Image 1 (cartoon, helix red, strand yellow):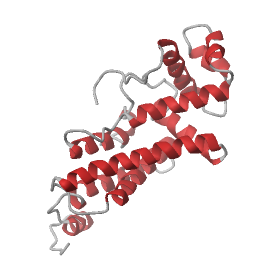
Image 2: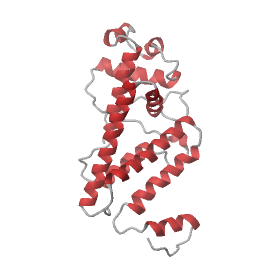
Image 3: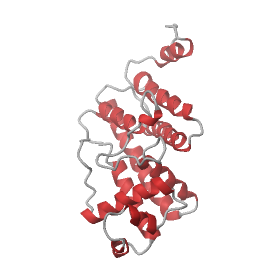
Image 4: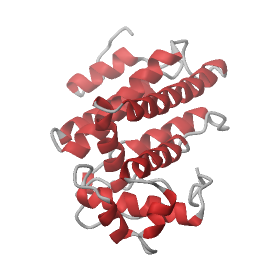
Length: 238
């Protein structure tokens, strides 16, 4: 992952439309989103929106493709150091250690959070709001299904590579990848909804328990769990 904007292959105008859609979605939410308020965030003529997209539904499906493209680019299955890549990815998704309002887990180059978007950045809010539409819309459901399958497979690939190199213990890489992604999505959900912010930190602890005490070869998860339970170095057979 570098500090330059991720190139998704879109034209300058299409990119500007995606940025405007993100800002409008963060300000107005999915239910109140309209071409008009997307146009307000767009620096060029609103007519260009209709030149590229027939209506709001078509634009939002294109926007969903865009944010999925960005999200999948945040982790590289061919990274030189699979463990480091996994840790960089989970730091990208998880809340920081400290105030939730300091979270800035946005792909490189994506606009900064808008003033009234709350403590969660607009990119994560957009993912969450569009993901909720999968309940009613098969097109959304299929796109998110493909994205989540890709992410689990990518994480599983990195885990398998660390197993092959002898750094991770033998395990079911796909099952562990599913566990990690479940923790990450739960963290995102509670941060956006604000229902149980403490769960976001519990998810952070759970992810790092797996990375530090379960997955590494030679680690002793039982001992680590006992220490977490009472704060002491308790003898425990893993």
